Length: 248
Image (cartoon, rainbow, N blue to C red):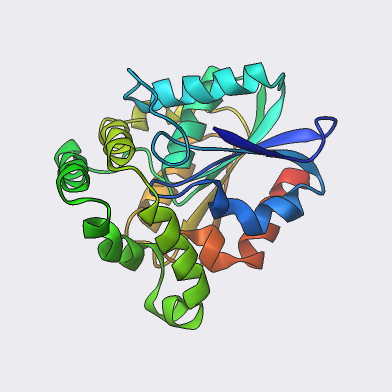
C-alpha cells in the first residue's frame, strides 16, 4: 500500500498521487527529497493497493492514510499532494492539526466539478475499461509540446494508467465527485505552498488562487505546465517544493 524511502530518523514527507497514477509518479523527486526526509508514497485502491472496502469519501481516504502513518510510527510529518493527493492533504491538515507541519498542494482544488461528471468517468471505466479514458486523460496531463519532447515521460504515465483497476478507479471517482472543501479551507493553519500549472485545464490557476485566498498561511507559485506538474516541471518542481520544505 505504500513505498518508504530513507531512514525513519529523518523528518517524514508523505506524498499523495493523482487519480490514475501510483507511487512511480514521484520517482524523480523521491530520490532527491530522500536526502532530507524519509519519504512515504502511498497507493490508492486499484492503483497498487487492494480495495478500501466501505470507504468512498476523501475524508475516509485520508483516515486510511492516517492509519498507515500510525502503523509506521510516524508522528510529525510534511505532506505534498498533487490533484486528488492534494485533496487528501487538505483533509489530513484538519485531521492532524498538530502533526502535519507543512503542506504542499499542487494542481488541485477545493472541489473538482459536478458529481455527475465523475459518475460518468466511473461508468466508462467500469464498462469500457481504462483504455477508453487514456487519450483524453493524457491530453489533460501534459502540454502538447512536452508530450512531443518527452515521450518517455508520457509512456510512463500511460503505463501507470494501463495498470489501474477499473473498480478502484471508479471508487476514487466517487470520492473526488463528493469532495467539497471550500468552507473548510480557512481551518488549514499549516504553512501551505500552492502550486498551479499555467496550462492546467483540469485544476486551473483560478482554482489555485481560490485556495490561497482562503488558506491563511499560504504561498503561491506557478509553473509552465499542464496538470501533472511534477513530471512536466521536473527539476523546477523539485526545487520549489524542496525550498519551501527547508525554510524554517
